[in-house]
Amino acid sequence: MPIATLMSVVQLLRLIARILLTFAVGNDAKARGLKHRKLFMVLTFFFPVVVSIIYICVRSTIPKIVPKMCVVCGATLAPEFVQCPNCGGMGFNDYLVPGFQEYKNKAKKLLISAICLILVAAGITLSVSIKFVSDWIKDGHDMYNYSDFGDFMDEWEDYLDGNDGNADYYDDYQDNADSDDLGKDFNNFGKK
Image (cartoon, rainbow, N blue to C red; front, side):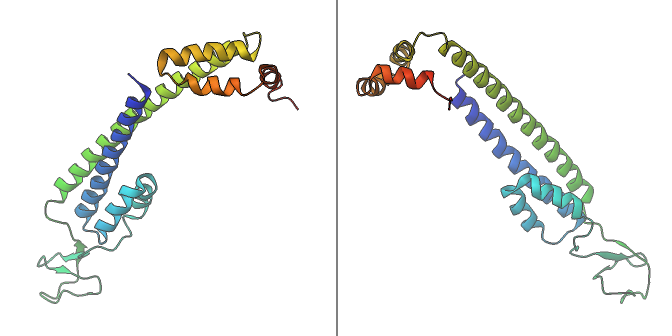
């Protein structure tokens, strides 16, 4: 498979992983009844790793839409109430969003799927990078086996003629330069 196609697949996998991670954060925030859920979702899409880590660290301190519920009558109350206005009760629990367990389960599944896609994309990128570097090292090593730069350029032109026909650029380059100067430049490359 061509490298360009593989890298396109990697970019598609990363985009899908971003979307899944965005919805994972959104479902988790909804399960917890947090304010600013949409803001976290948008930020997660554009900065997935950083915002996800920040979200995990601060999600217990983010204000809730309706933070507490009376244990006596079940009324949902704002945080400033110390006594329930309905029944006079003073015991409160954290308010749980209806269907919170479903949202938590969705968030976990989306997070696991996003992590799997990220790992697959990283694996493809790593294998392409290893292949590219090994080919580069092999080609670089073969370059030193030529007697001068002109022989290397001749074989490079033959390679280009066989692949994509862009050897005319190299013909023009070599015609406009003295081959002895090119050989000296090549042999002295990197030396001070």
